[in-house]
Length: 379
Image (tube, rainbow, N blue to C red; front, side, top):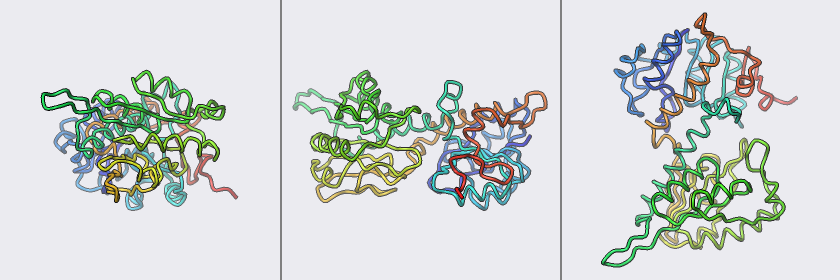
């Protein structure tokens, strides 16, 4: 059983799919591990670190991927990588399948078993494999750090002989994993924190972290959560009432962090140009949904926009990658925990149980076809 870890081809991707500790554990399962030279450098892992863990380091992607049974990546493989993979190989990564039918077909046409880690079901057994949570947690933390850096003022209240420094006001929009970590981080840094979400269950979570909850709490609000724990798309009437409340609140904030995403859909627009115009000069918006179109109307992917009224809108791409060493470590553990369930301990071979609920939830392509029901082309 040969496991390959190629270098990521996307220039904005600084993470790597396996750390030396996880390499040792794969070898303990009976695998031969091959790493492409330089794959871990942007995450602080050298080729020598991988070699010391027992991996073989190959100079090119072609050599690393040759005859691999399992390929571990952070992002979906590019077409030139697919060309090096053998029929029947398993590719496990964050596949970003929504809206990428052509790319999924390419994986299927190559005869690959493609698994999307972000489709992992949110059940107790799979918590250790939940890449969305592990990476969003770090995104929420980093958003506060980046927001504080751009804000240019102290966050906590300070009583000094020269005068009192007021505490910064930070508003978190969207209270999922990223939002909760942003609240906790901002509170630890001494800010006055408020938060909003359309899911009623989040109110208690927000308040338990010492922040104030802000939302229109009507009957629609009480029903605004899916069985999977995600936010439902709200009616136009509710959105208008919520927007009016948020507009008055945002005008008083120093830092706004937006985290709202609905799987498979563009990011909902939460912060309008008019809201941005109402904010004070020097205020900051950090948009964590910028890769899906952004929660802020004025966000630009990969840029820090400074508006005419002096508000900074931060649109960094790949926020977890801004903490590459930590995010790679957590992602690598997520991957190992999943791969381990598909290894036959006796034969030391890759032998997934195709009817396992984890496999069925994450498997996109198999035997030349797109098999996941959410991504099959409808006739």
